[in-house]
Figure 1: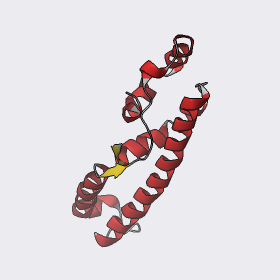
Figure 2: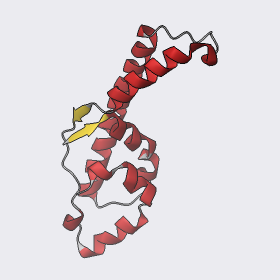
Figure 3: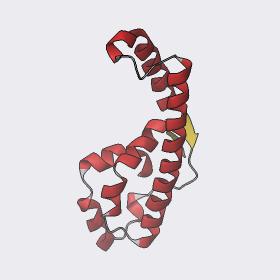
Figure 4: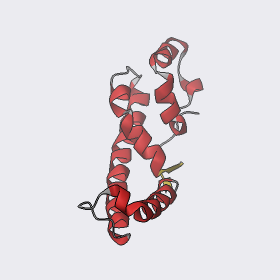
Length: 122
């Protein structure tokens, strides 16, 4: 499935909440694998972010308000990176594949978590 760096960062941000849920094993494995891959991609994004800051000449010792043009350029480039697509080799979780007695687990998922993990569900 194709996702973006933004999807990966969102997944990492809710991984602790997902870890507290009691999914059936076959779905828990998909979530666990997705979180692991998301952490790897988030690490890649951090490296890209530092490279962009360096390339744009951002200096952490200078006040941010004195570097507005640089900050604007950095933000523009990082926005582009956040929307780059990544191939994630995991199947989506199909809600229809949950057995009737397993669907109760879905009601425990906060809407905010669904919102940040929409790419995982089908």
